[in-house]
Amino acid sequence: LTPDRTSMRVFHAPDPRSVLWENISFPLSMQDTAKFGMKVVWIVGILFWAIPVSVVNSLANLNSILQALNIKTVDSSKPWYGFLSGLLPVIAFSFLLNALFALIIVAAKRVIKLKSRSDVDAYVTYWHQLYQFANLWLIVIGGSIFNQFQSLLNDPQSIVTTIANAMIGSSVFFVNMTLTQSIGKCALDISQLQKFVIALLMRLWRSESTITQRQMDRAKIPETYQWGYEIPQILFILMIVVLYCPIVPIMEVFGLIYFAGRYITYKHQFLHVNAQTFEGGGNATWLSIFVFIISIIYMAEAVFIAYMGLKQSPASAAFGFVPLVVTFVFHLDLRYKTITYLQNLPLQKAAAIDVK
Image (cartoon, rainbow, N blue to C red; front, top):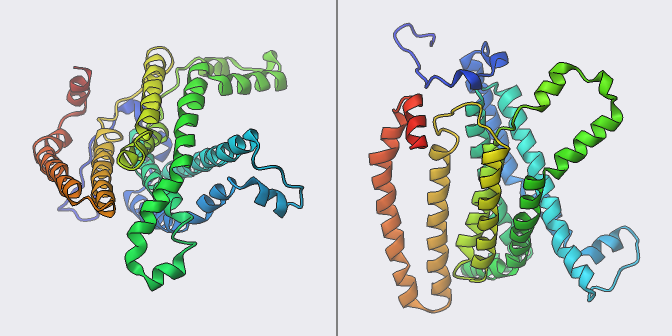
């Protein structure tokens, strides 16, 4: 209800199993204020996100780090040096995103006090994905535009050429990330090694006699799929593969390896490990992900047109406008004929349609 007696704000009723009962009494006006405040924080964070991303990129130069620590440098021509230089930034980048995900979760549950887990999933998916978009362009331009800032001021028209060259230079990092996600993430998800290690350490720290029955029962509950954590990572790899198709065609091969591995992993996880304990009506997946996927397609088509233009291939660049127009028409058709209709579906009917 609103303070105005003649008006009422109506929301979709969430699945009772997803309700966060500890937040149910939090006033809607205070929730709106908290949501606006966190929106400002996340936008400012995106503006300054280049700082931690630059630190992560600097890990690729091991000898510079060793010099800063007054440690003897090593021979950069050795194979292990190249392997370690490519792997360290990817691992550090993963830890950085995990920390960001945890902060967004805390903001959604403890600061904004959203009243259902489906709302939390939608909120986390949206902001996590926005940071993934920022990550790509900050990684691409972080080492080029910032280092050539003065020359760009003297010749602003060279910014397109600079970004194109930077995308080629950043392809090695994205290849390493795609392969690491393909091999490491899939292996960890299927083996559940990290959870086994945590459980083993807890068993060593606490004797079995001190574990209550409630704790043992809680350990047997199937894990719920974390949409806000997994989906932005998948879309990030999709964005890399699609954007790099015209520039580094071999990226398609690495993308095929990644998505084949994720298909095998999710097929196993959804059949034997994960169990969705509530229905969100597609709010965290369809409505949010559709916007990001369409944005990825638009960006990929724009990059193709720009890159063909730089290669002095006007015919190819002109042909790139054809899929751009087709995507725009399809977007409008889907928006007015499908999305509007789905937003008004009852929750149970939406779930039944998903099952079919």
